[in-house]
Image 1 (cartoon, rainbow, N blue to C red):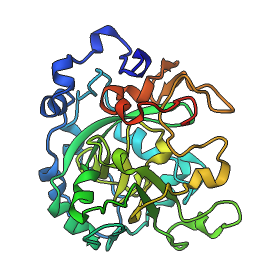
Image 2: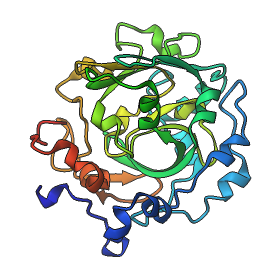
Image 3: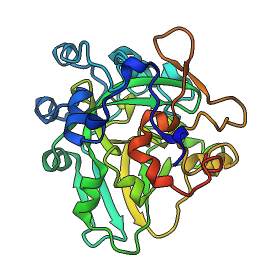
Image 4: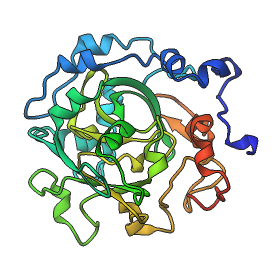
Length: 320
């Protein structure tokens, strides 16, 4: 495969040794990705999910960086600059509008082409699957980015639990539909609510894809997708569906929210690709929140060595 699909750090000094990059355990350690289950277990779910993070848990992340050497964005950055159209199209309005969001009780139905369909309470998911710290870069399609310390578990772990059948080729995700919780969902003339997303099954089984349940060592805030959201760090941020209530294994490629709105601008795959501009702006550079100026965007957001093989033989100029 061409070298443009490999991870290319911003600075030579940030290059992770290849021996570490391909060893999952060492890779996680190199990125500061320790198991986070004990931290989240101390933060029992209760009603609203808009409370601030525990200062002690935030302090525990001081000085941590991603595997390319970039520092974390602050908790304030991550929880006050949010794309979440169910609340508002204004990024700074989401946090105040979500302050009374009730993320408990909560359940996630996993069904479709599986041998073991089941509905899981969020508490059961937290107990069943060890929560891991994953420091990931988030690259928004709007050409801004962050570095976020998520807590969660591999999506693959849940999918293996329900046992996809041989007919399952894709995974479809659906967000909560509740106009009392999400005021913007009342406007069905502008947007095809509820929010829905999809992955190819092999993408969903990749170790980098996680279901996030927390950040900065505390339960996920409402404005960031509480109580459970998808994180696929090699794709543009709109693929990271929030407040998930349903996961379905299906045979055919599902439509996605932004495809239904404008398929010309928002494709199914939505892999971060600096070589393919958005129809209305370039994608070759990005603004890291909290920094001045622009930085180069990396192919697959810098995770190419982990995911490029998924797209071997595809025309990556067409999988926007």
